[in-house]
Amino acid sequence: MNHETLSPTPSAHPLLVIISGPSGVGKDATLAKMKKAGLSFHYVVTATTRPKRPGEKDGVDYHFISEDEFRQKTTKNQFLEWAKVYGNYYGVPKREIEEALKQGRDTIVKVDVQGAATIKKILPDAVFIFLMPPSKEELANRLKKRQSSPSAELDLRLSKAQEEIESLPLFDYAVVTHKDRLDLTVSQIKAIVTAEKYRLKPRVVRL
Image (cartoon, rainbow, N blue to C red; front, side):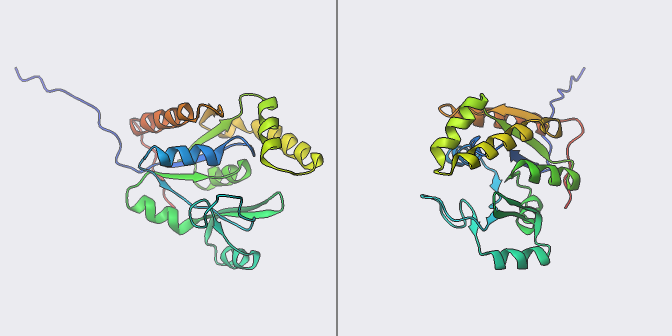
């Protein structure tokens, strides 16, 4: 008797993975670690009107553009979603996502929680991952080290972070980011993607 071995194969449908979380949680650091690890995702570069921080590169970390250029892109409907956050505009380029998915590439988009909520309405079949701080105290320390802003702005960011953490039900997964263990954060994101590939009903994202 011929016993045929059945082995599941991963879905051929590319995933759209949304990485989000409060300001200061380590979204940029996590993505940088993922890129350094050579993970074969397409990383969508967000457009922003905010100034470059030391060490950031245009077209790599963000597309740094003027407010006029940003407005032109919004009127032409070139962003999947866009928002004004802490006085600066951020937008996710739609065409870049469309092209990556057409090529069959798993695609990573990094947005704030407000942006993730907008994308959830448009593309509910994306995978939504929320990066969480280990504690409110740790998040406060990270924000203090990162910026020389007045304490009033720090208080505003911490207050908003608490609101954003309450948005957890919008997400599929939550991953805690430990500053000195980003490799663990990356391995957990990899595990989520692997599990998603073996869903019996694969997610299919259509823009």
